[in-house]
Image: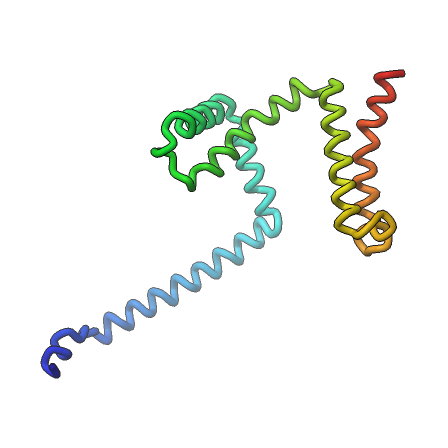
Length: 167
């Protein structure tokens, strides 16, 4: 058995091992410098830059529509060939391509859009009050006042639009 262990033991050259460890150290330093430069250039604006990139990609109109169309066709007609990990990106592209046009053209300045806005505002207010433990508690918590006032202001537009429409 002793002979077998010597045979299976990996022989390492100290020079090669030193070269590899020095290369790994250089890669670590390069990664640290990259992160430092990226934070100096982008800082916390990385999320904004990423969302701008997604928006510009989805604004390419026909490309986004074709990608969304292919994702829908694959998901509907070939569900076995559509991987599960692709479901969320496909849905996101579909949402980014279709939803802005739907809301901007179809629901803008219509009663349906006003009612949808009113329903969303009421739902958010109700959920905020429920999470705070009551209407009175929603004003006593540190961030409750600003959240409640913000949600109430969200309700002002649809109510005012309904008043103007029916008067």
